[in-house]
Length: 124
Image (tube, rainbow, N blue to C red; front, side):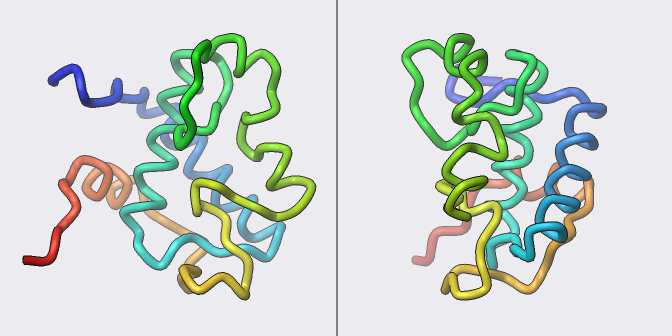
């Protein structure tokens, strides 16, 4: 693994965050992104932060001090903007009216592992 790659989450954390995301989407009436690769990368990032920091800190933001941010809990998933205004910066939980919303509220562990580890196809 090169230094640009995020650490791999434990299988237990990955499964915990996968189940959480599915349950939360169902409960809030939100959907995953139409690009399942986005969903996979975000869930994998949340799981890695759960292992590293003890909390599912949003993986889509820059932090000067990740442990301090995780302790503060503002950006722990579901973050305050999501809980208060249904705004998900990561595009994991999208409302019905979001143009990037997909039709799914589920994703398999296998899909997460495959999609999160694959380079994004770039149109030529």
